Image 1 (tube, one colour):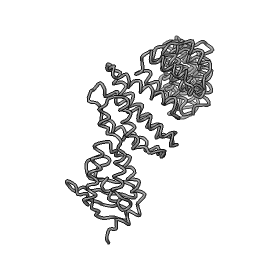
Image 2 (cartoon, one colour; image 1 turned 180 degrees about the horizontal axis):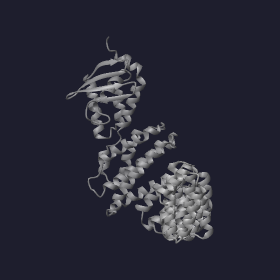
Image 3 (cartoon, one colour; image 1 turned 90 degrees about the horizontal axis):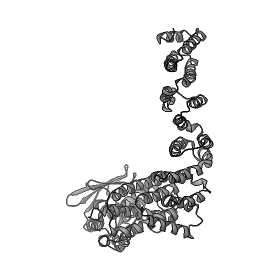
Length: 524
């Protein structure tokens, strides 16, 4: 049976168009290596170096040989939509491109495609990279991104990470040779590509509220953090000042012009103002710009941002006035500001913020947060409140808001203030297990006030006895041994002797329990 390529192309034309579109988005005519790859692929097509060997209908696989310097095998799996090549190059290689163009020529003109592809070259990235200025670096990003994202075409969320990685890979080929410039170049490209891509996603109506996007954005934040650590560890050149100004503008656009994932955008904003933009004059000008901007004047987010600058500039009166109105839907951002104040060792700002948030915590923990996240956020928030001193009323407000999720931090708070009776009462009110008691500071209570633990040991031992199995009796004996040790420490051995005799008498019909008590040497 003869191999009919035209029939195969007709049957799988959507896949071929999809692959050609992917090639257009991945390979950029302004990148020398990409241009050379396409040139060699076109040469293979013109010279009929692409030889279609066989097609297996049952597996929907097409086998091809590309006559290169040495013959290379390419396999197309139409069912799984995969193109595989035997050459060592990762990603797109000239063999895959030449095969797809050879199939494409049965649908449209390859020459027309190549001409249109080359027309997209508006500037050489190498030339732009040699002109070291924010404008030329931004032009590099615009050139690459204009090729990757087209018009208002929507982007599937699972493709976002790959597309941005592809753009950054092309830009990082033009990394400056000078080591002091490399972190700044990486930061500029990361931030600019992220900014342009987010703008496109918003314009095109692409889905942002997905796990894929959150994973992608968290990766980019982590990458930026690494580059910022590099740049802050080195001396800054005067020639870098214009780049810092452009970065400042881009960071501002993230918080005032982009949409969705407000908490993550705020983290990005705080990251730059906590590490890179450390000059007081820069902060003063940024605050003035935000306060005087008519575009963002009524945005509640901007009111929260102002607090950050009040912390930096130590404008406590302005901050006190601003936090009289707390936007309940942005409580996570306020917590982020509190952490920012902690990083600045600003005890006044920490206290102002945290005490202003107290009345809103109950609703936040018990209504706004999903149950799966409550334990985690209770731990985080309680660590923040450890930074300040609370009155008795404020303490009640805080820990009642935590509810049962805050037993452990409340226990630690009681221990810190040496309130051992209340610690024991808390755990009698909300019983759990001996192991949980140990995580809540049982060891410290045994050292300082062992007598307060006796009712707890009694409760947990009785819970084991009620189960009426030898395994539970053994566990009860272990607990009673702990109780005996606590009684001895507190000078209450007579009480212990009377207690264990009473227990033995009460459960004298439980032979297995009596045996375990004797084995444990608990009976006098």
